[in-house]
Amino acid sequence: MTVRFEDAEGYRPADQTQRWNQSFYFNFYDPACKVGCFIRIGILENLKESNSWCVFFMDGKPLFARQNLNLPYTAQRLDKGIEIAGMRLRALEPMKKTSFSIEAQDFSATLQFDQMYPMQDAIAISKGQEGSITAAIAHVHAEGPCRVTGTVTLRGGKSIPIAGKGFRDVAYGTRDWDLLRHYRLAWPIFDNGLVVAAVHGYSMNYDSAHMQMLNDGSGWVAIKSLEDRNTYGDDDMTIEKMDWKVVDARGRSYAFTGRKLFRWFFPADTFVLTEQMMEYRLSDGTLGYGLGECGYRFPWSGNGNW
Image (cartoon, rainbow, N blue to C red; front, side):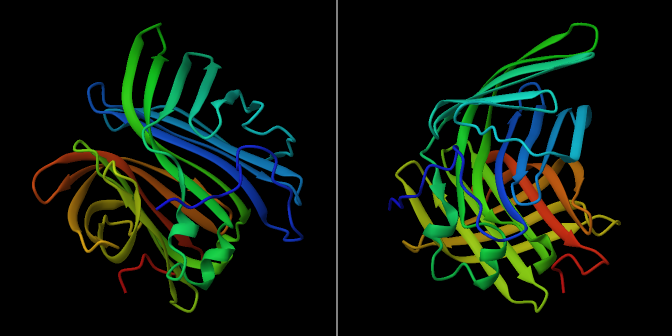
């Protein structure tokens, strides 16, 4: 199934919503060197603000962390290149290939993200089950897995070659975290080629919404059923383990577990995102790696294990 969506890497004009957002997100993990990262740029045109984060880690510990909220607005977009907070990103091939670089004191990185499978709009493919609160998060949310290559250079000049896999997304539309009580996400990329992109959100009224799909190399298919069980640490915000099961539109069932490799908190005023890299495992033992994420509203409104 192919769902057409507008080019989201160029400038997408805002509507009248105050919290209009256009964002570019990337992550990766290389299990050979145990290095990974989380990268995001958010642009809020009507608020005349931008924000960004860039966190690299190795073997469960941070290597570099730069978070910038309430930056000045930028008119740059990914299609022609964007530079913000020392990060430089540019689309080399639209929606397929992107370059990234950052050079700071005692740390630098140069990466290239190359498409594994074509990006897909998770909202469009989930139409009919996405729920009313999805409109508060984005109008378009294109996602897809990548092969990631490059180099990370540490303090003292140690250079680490990167050959990993990751996910990226490009989104635009309203982004109002205050309408969400909680959400949870799993983006595993398995060694057998299976990729899952599943999000379950809860409104303040406990209504549910889903953005979910999978790809085994033959194309994106909607997920029609999701069981998402997380086990949290003592802080109720760190995912220690995941135990999920998905059934796609063709009736195929996949069960997988996940364990924490690295965790970082990204604040958004009265909302916080827990960004984690996970080691995933299918029920047949096939390994995978990828993002595990949750969001929490303040004052504390729970983590979905009600």
